[in-house]
Amino acid sequence: MHRLRAQIERVQGRSMEVPPLPTHPAFASLLPGGGLRPGAAYSIASSSSLLLALLSQPSQTGSWCGVVGMPELGAEAAEHAGVDLERLVMIPEPGPRWLAVASTVAEVLSVVAVRPSSRATDKDISRLAARLRDRGAVLLVQGPWPQVEASLELSEPRWSGLGQGHGYVSAREVTVTARSRRWPTTRRQRMLLPGADGQVIALQPGLRPHETIAPIRAVG
Figure 1 (cartoon, one colour):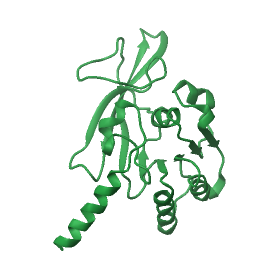
Figure 2 (spheres, helix red, strand yellow):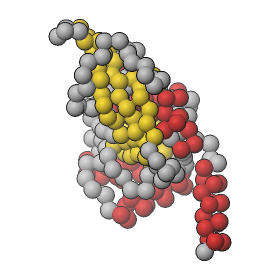
Figure 3 (tube, rainbow, N blue to C red):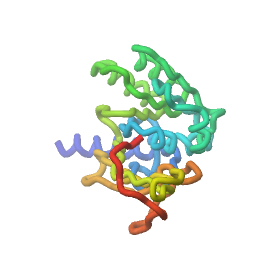
């Protein structure tokens, strides 16, 4: 048993030695290894802002990214969030074969983001996981997904820029909570997602943007 455990730890250690894809520094403490690990899957909240923030840095540093099954996600919003549109492939309507489409583009793209439109079988999920490991691609799934490297959720949103019933929304402050099988406890980071310029900004404890209002339920 001890020999088997040591072997597993060595294998896991080698897998973590694969250089992760870079992400915005605001997410460094929330992701094992400080970035997106090639061959791994991540479960993320159904938030366009969160997704684009995770895609921006990889695309800017030369990684091709794909978005599958998100017809409401526009190129203008992606560019405003810092995503390099020249390295972004969008497949808004994959139909019922969304998983096959995601598996196919994972052959050639470094990061694939998908919103499942139906439940996948265990066999299909295992097949896709093998494809990710073989090609070194990263999978970002909006919603629950088995055997993920980490999961990211949003909570406690606060909007800034609004006065007494007037003004323009300029930024949104949220708490990003990360859970990973590699950590004994959850991790949290307060950040602007997005900030006034569309970019993500990590907040130090106790720091708040000006003119925040009470939290609301919707997180998108």
